[in-house]
Amino acid sequence: MTIQIKGKFNAIPHPVHHRLKHIEIDDNALTQFLENIKHFNVERIEYVPFMRFALAVELRKVLGESFQEMLKEILHDRETGGFTIGVNNLTTNTDDYIKFSTALTHLIGIPNHDAMSNKFYAIFTVKHTFESDTYLRKAYRILELHTDGTFVEENTDWVLMMKMSEKGAVGGESRLLHLDDWDDLGKFSTHPLAAHKFKFSYADRGSKNIKDEVHSPSFFYDQNKVCIKYNHQCTHPQTISEALYLKDIQDSMENSSGTVSVGLPVGQLVIINNKFWLHGREPFVENPNLERRLMRQRGRFIG
Ligand SMILES: [Fe+2]
Image (cartoon, rainbow, N blue to C red; front, side):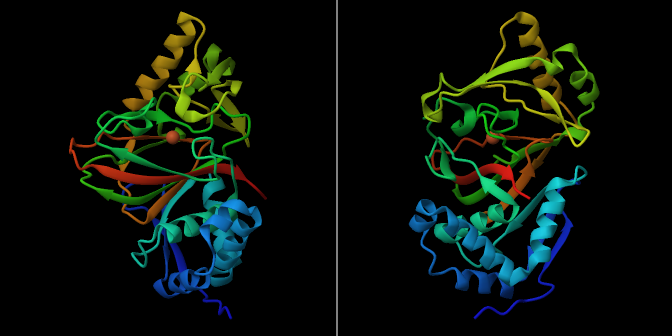
């Protein structure tokens, strides 16, 4: 039997980023959630989509509907649009991490299929050795700012990243830029090429397992606010002027004072609105033992 614990969560300003919120959950409430979902099996969650929503229901039973409303409110609020949250060191179990993040994503929407893992989530490792055909898993260089899902037809409204584990990791913080903290937003979003439909495709990269080719503008409007679709690695300019426009955007964002490094402790996750937040990663300090596991889920808002 589930006892609803009232007033057991709180959104506070994030200690590092002025736009983000950090959501605290009471230990007892979280312990009860973890207890209630013990019998949920991750394989069944992967195979049976309604079981993912059942996890969301369990989290809502413990924290109440106002918790779900708060998550949606933060993510849709242009002033913030992002938050961090974690499991308070109550568990280090990978399955618990998957279940906790899945409960959260199904309170705000529905994840898209991730072609890299062929599941609704993907767990990937960044290590000392380079083994990737994109910058995602190359540890010792910067991962430039971008939005996710530019190369697929379905909308990618939000992105979740959770730190599952790490060892030998110094550096590697998330780099985050809220569009309204970018001084040159006006300059690039009103440029004649802002509405140009660029070709986005990862068909040339085997690891992405995706052949889609999407043609879409870099800037678009949502609820009368300018939003961005930008990914340097999968955008294919067809002319020198298109290429220079994209490169100027990248250079401007990378050097913007609005780009902030945010560390994420193990067991914590960040969810950002992918329409007006860009993300990347700082380089790691070289270490042969480096190994960091991250989980991602990307998806759409529902309701
Ligand atoms: Fe990304």
